[in-house]
Amino acid sequence: MQRLGCLKSCWQLLRSSCEGAAKQVTSSRCYSLRPSSFGILFDIDGVLVRGRTPIPAAKQCFRNLVDRNGKYKVPVVFVTNAGNCMRQTKAEHLSHLLEVEVSPDQVMLSHSPLRMFTQFHKMCVLVSGQGPVEEVAHKLGFEDVVTIDMLREAYPVLDVVDHNRRPKDFIPPVKDLRPIDAIILFGEPIRWETNLQLIIDVLLSNGNPGKTWTSTHYPHIPVMACNMDLLWMAEAKNPRFGHGMFLVCLESLYKKVTGYDLKYEALIGKPSVVTYNYAELLIRQEAEKLGWSTPVKRLYAIGDNPMADIYGANLYNRYLRASRRNKAKVQAKRCGGGADPSTEAVGDHHKMTLSKMGSTTVTYGSVEDLPEACSSILVCTGVYSRDQQELPSDPAQTVTEQCIFHGHRDFRFDPTLTQPSFMVQDVKEAVELIFEQEGWPLE
Image (tube, rainbow, N blue to C red; front, side):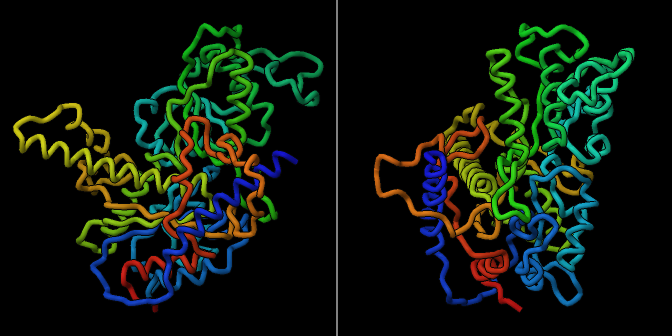
């Protein structure tokens, strides 16, 4: 009951901050039709669909986003933390549900930025998740891929929690695989006990699960995790476990067995900044297809999860502001006759190209290429809902960080990052709000 009360307090705190932000939205509409300079990032689950069921407002909103010929009026990219399918499959699914054409180039899955992690592409990687994970890994550029099922078959005595899956009459011989160099966690697997056991085996054996465990191999081999969502919204009335819950289990087990913290080479998917950097590149690519000559200077990110969508968009907005401040400092020092090399290098990690994403058109090379701002818009059709309980009247029951934060362990809790720029009821209202902010008429 104490935990339930704490969660209710958490949601009410979010509600209070969100409704404060929502007061910024006015009902008057005055359009000046400013030059095109914005793009929209759509979350999918809880914003456009719940499970396999489309949210009614989703189809309606896309009538404002395409013209009579079905061509998009503004650059649109779908950014989801899902990762159990190919981009082509997700695009076809969205096209069917929304009744507009969605191309694979407009779809960004949680693992999409792994295309840029070329230093791992020639390594032997173990992949965990469900769906066509081996095919997904190869499409991302990884050449030597081992799945959990392949590992289980090669070492038949490792997976023994389910008695029915243990070897019966005799133990099959071990099929030696080359050592695992890195681990990629694409999303929540189906058999958690199997995946948890075999991943721990690989970590504690330095990539050789047939050998004896040892905690001397620390730090362990690289681990990259996609999709940190603790919860997500499907058809059920309440949120369901996401991949973030699986990561909590893995981290807890590793810590319990070794006494050390599990370390990640990279955490990918919302709310990570690299995810939004990658999404902005896709937005720029879509703007080029529309023939826009002006850079995309404003992004609007629509989501239903304060701990992933809103936190991530706000974190990216903070990153954009910091990048511009650092750029201004460099310019000021140059004018003064001396530049700080450490500050001057701030833009180096931006130097990515669309060729690393399967295209070859744009170089992403300087702070000037970045948008000016990213506004977060929270909808109430998914994880977040206005129908939350009030804060307790007893001040002793104040919400604590441990109770409220559903984000990943390695992300510092900051309540201000969960407060959206705007809050609306659904995605249709979100698009109407964006058009209003940009001075665009609704047709």
